[in-house]
Image (cartoon, rainbow over all chains, first blue to last red; front, side, top):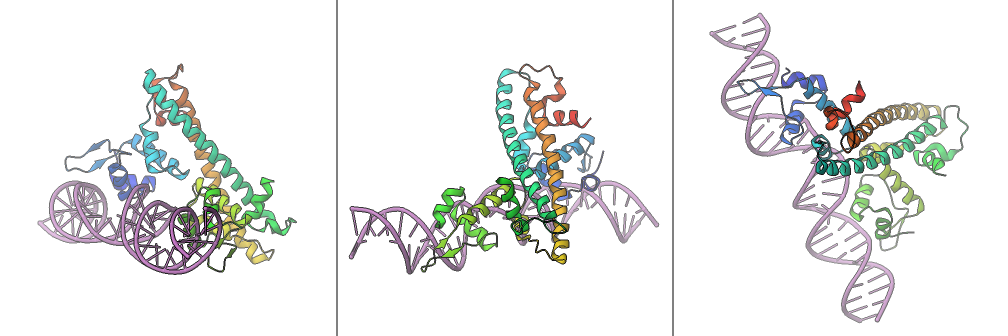
Length: 135
Length: 135
DNA sequence: CTTGACTCTGGTCTATACTCCAGACTTTAT
DNA sequence: ATAAAGTCTGGAGTATAGACCAGAGTCAAG
C-alpha cells in the first residue's frame, strides 16, 4: 500500500490533484491508517493511469467519472443504458481519431515542407498543410 | 465578407468566443467596416474550423496558437525551430492516438460484454475491459 | 425616422481543474 | 527526544475558456 506522496511520485500527479480527484469521486483510497493517512493499492494505480489517459485524449474529469462509473451488471436494463452511453462515446472517440489523424498528417507535411522539401509555399503553415489534405 | 454573427452561426461558435480568440491572437478579422464592425473572409472560416478540430482533440488554445504561428520560411534557422516543435507535437499526437484507440477498444468490449456477450464479469467495467487489452 | 436587430468595448461572473497556503497531527531519521 | 519530512482538512488563489451584461453606437425595414 502506498501513501499519497508515493502514489504521487509513481503517477506523476500531485498530492493535491489526487485529493481533488477523490473529492470529485474519481478515486477513493483503498484504506486509511488509524491516523487517517490515505493508503492506495495497485488497482488505485491502474485507476489513476486510466484517468490520465482519458484526460489526455480530451475527456473532462466529469466524463472520466462517467466512464469509470459504467458497469454492465448483466441485467437488461443496465445493459441498455450502458450501451447507449458507450456507443455515444465511441462515436466521439472516432471523430477525435479522424481529426487527430488530419492534424498529424498536416504536421508531417509541415515538417518536410522546408528542409529539402520541394513543396510549394502554401504548405509553409499548418493551415496550408491541412488544406492540402482536405482537397 | 461575414459579420461576426454570421460567422458565429456558420461555425457554431459564439460571438463572445470569437472575440475571445481574437483577444488571444488566434484569429484577426480580415477587415473592419468604417464603423468598426468585424469582417471575416473565407480563410477566416477555415482558420476557425482548424481551431475547433485542434481543440476537440485536446489541444489547449495556447497550443493551437503555437500551431497556427508555425511557419516554415524556407530559411534554415526557422526550419530548424519549426521541425523541432512539430516533431514534438507529432509525438504527442501519436501518444494520444494510442491512448484513444485503447479507450475505444475498451468501450467496444464493454458494449458487447453484456447483451448476449459471454465475457467474464471482469469486463463489466471500463477498467476491466481496459485491462484485458493491456495483457 | 424610428424601432428592432446587430455590433462595439469593457467589465464582471462562472465552471473546470487544479495549486498553494495555514495550522495541526503523524511518522521517520538521527 | 526532537527535528525534518510527510499528511490531514479547509479554504483561498490561479489559469483556461469562455458566458453574460451594460451602455453606446450602427444598420435595415417599414
